[in-house]
Length: 269
Length: 270
Image (cartoon, rainbow over all chains, first blue to last red; front, side, top):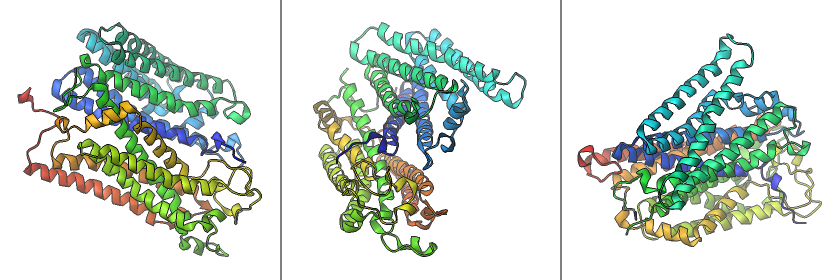
């Protein structure tokens, strides 16, 4: 009897390989962008270099999160799922960002923030500076509110709620800028809209992630076999992630107006 | 020959795919060592000691030669991908063909043991299945029934298949061929190339340590971590690390003696 059981492949950890591809691609392009910045001193290239290098680190954090989530005891009981940062928070419930830890939370702000800031710099230096400052200030505030529970100055849970709001205050405008600015730009349709497509796909998977967090905090089951959706999300997340990363790479590198160059390579511009 | 921006980008994304395939092959090589080479030192700590072949399925015992050959090719394939990445980055002739050949051979040598392991006659009971690590026990119990993709051989098999499928796409092939044009060489001289390839060995070293960490938690039998007994598998990680450091250091030294073009032009040249 020939039966292809998708869930038998190491509990969908095979999808993690796509996160690895995204991680390596982000590292390579982050370094190339940084080299290009050193040649041209264009701030948008530096900001994108930071964003892609941050994406490289974030990919590994997501790999760790997903693979930790899927390790189970032989009994398959939810209560015996191996503890990991994501698992702990999902089981504990609560709509907060503790599932990722403070370091990854900073990346969730900085990655879309710096990509949007780079696009703003390309539009106008002043606009770019203002938006970069906005992202940095909100990131610092996020860090402070995430560290606040150590001081117990605020009611329990309030600082986590504020931190979650700060994430939205960066992600939503950044998402809008990443989608809108390339579309509004003049030039050939294909390279510039790739950035918008990448931003749109990233927005979709961020919304899905948010829905998963909300539903689990309201008591929804985690595992597919119990009627939950977390398993499905963790399985499809790597595909969304790699599509958004690759689209942004093609868009930011592919459009000559953004100023990416490599020493000794002659592009057909 | 000038290259289009999207062709350049495509080539670098394909190189990232090569690197991940190399890492998956390395992890698969690790994972298959204990079943291909049947390390007898594992048995000494158990009382009574397991007979040889305990940690193997009957199909593996019967086809041990195939598993050993496959494991050797998997180890070699990891470094073959390193050569493919080097050849692609330094625009050597035949880089595309080498990639295609490496992926086909690796795919075939991954598919054969994977199929052997996962196709079993219904009703066959695994030898001493109940003492196997949980991840090795098939779902549904120790009496095999249906085919399901579950052995560690599949990861690298699918990865190599993905590479084959990507390489045969005409725009990708065209991109890689144009990327290999000597006029567009950006990797500099030998010194810089050595330094660049040291990154690949650092990458292998990272994946080796990650794989060793994963395997350690998956090989607890009767409360004993049997992975710790198979210390030879950590040698791969340390070897890759020492190789990477040596290449980086050697590249730095060599660079002092050889002038080079560079990814980064000097400010005076701007």
